[in-house]
Length: 497
Image (tube, rainbow, N blue to C red):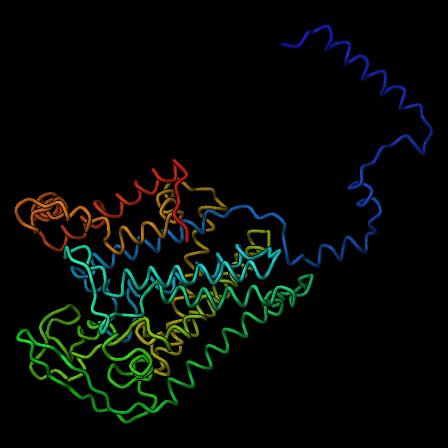
């Protein structure tokens, strides 16, 4: 503990020094540090220019909780629609045209990936190192995507693994995210030195400053539109294998251009040519159309007179649709740029909400005029605009509540999940943790802890398969993974690619 007498002597000495300094000449009377000298030397004209011109690269950016909460919301939506969509078909993927709750998951992922890219690559000291990291992360996403959705893992229902390489599925959710991330991040990195040093005043200056990103999105749009409406789609065939090893070949008659129906669209044709018909998703959502089943919009047996294409494969995360999905990432990175360069809440929200409204209006006009229907399976342009606009509105709403008003407590579980999004995706959305638990069964593979909780705690108690399933997904899955993510966050454990 300090001696009070010495403290008083020190204070007295300090006062004496200050008194002596006051009697020095005018030239030496004020000691100004370098920062204050710069401020004094700045003329009013320069200060006014500095207010008008906002630097393109900021040294420090406060972490925005909205990013983690939005990412967590997307994971929660995926678990909800994947595991409860069978009980409630209206929240499951739309069989073809239209948009349901499940159809927002993929573009929301791509949107927040774009936002994250802008923040992660705002300062790029070495471009070669950045490119190396981008390529490595892309390869990791591709590896996990093929492993989880390629057919090797049969979790959580079947306690088997392995895939016939003649039928492996090359496309999937993580694969699409990987390709969009690769293109958008690469453009962001390679155009670092081509940006102006200051952001000119005006509402559109943020677009011109990052024009190369928008040029990349426009190129993707042109490739998609010209291929979708200009490519000739011939007849195609596929083989189905019966229970007795009997094989039956079916032929779908096409011979047309610009068709946006399930059977003869260019999106499916490109995937059949590039990947092969045996490497596509074997259970497309179009099987829930009225033309295919009497149980529409739910799943059920096919009609006896169902069209041939109802049994055919289709890849919902295919190559051509992924090209237009780049535009979703481009819109997301724009929101990230706004977050970096506009420091006021009102300026950010003005940019975000105005763009979101424009996108929604364009999508609604295109859909209801039948010019370009909203379609997740084709990843149509109207679908891109509609879901990106919705993402912008939700992101802005989260920003107001969480970062502006400071109401974080109700959204903490979303933040926790968002901080460990990849881990929760693998454990929950892909069913790896339930598969591990199901591996410990008693007498029968149907007698596991997961099935026991689902049936005895939820379905039997509520006497409803649908309601019991929904409550199981909410409390036994979503709440559980929220708590798990919170515990991992407490111990600073994160899994990032």
